[in-house]
Amino acid sequence: MVAYFQLQPAEAELQQLADKYWQETGEKDRELERAAFEAGEAIRNGDHSLANLEAIVRWKSERAVHYLIGNSSEKIRRALAAAASPESTIETAVNALLDLHGVDILVASAILAAIHPDRYAALDYRTLEALGHARHDVRFYEEYVAFCKRLAESNIVKPQGELPGPTALRALGRALWEWSRVHAG
Image 1 (tube, rainbow, N blue to C red):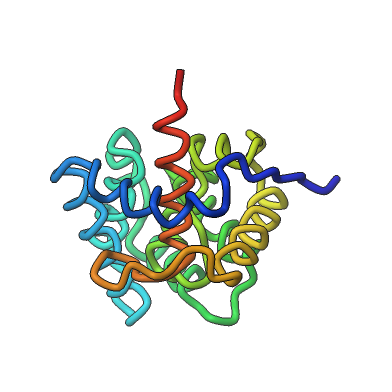
Image 2: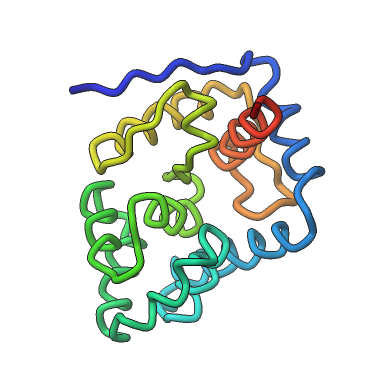
């Protein structure tokens, strides 16, 4: 089964929404996002530590952080190495992260987006709502990333160079999230 995405906001709105997201987000959330993308860069550069994993998980789901201590340092190192590897497929990277206690598909997608903001998009209920969808499994995530990459590569959203994860793909995620927030009942 192939997932179907229908962009809810107008393409012309996306850059403004991405910018508005950052302006409207509280300082605590901005700091969490900055810390997550700094941790993602550290992981990309070989620091596969619990501290870096925690910083990303805290950004995505504060509630999930305490589950991470159920993982050994070696298990975390292996999962983050697989997630950071340029050779890993989406399926390989996601499955390595799902093997960690406290990591579901949404958290795995955030970890991947923080490590490689040019390759992966964070999956969350708001971005899915902005795409007219709500299913969550690895195949769905692969299709979601491919769809988001196509949108980002069409240059309708520009990288926000001064922000964490300074890629068009991350700017698109901010735009979709902001559209959902603004349109929430």
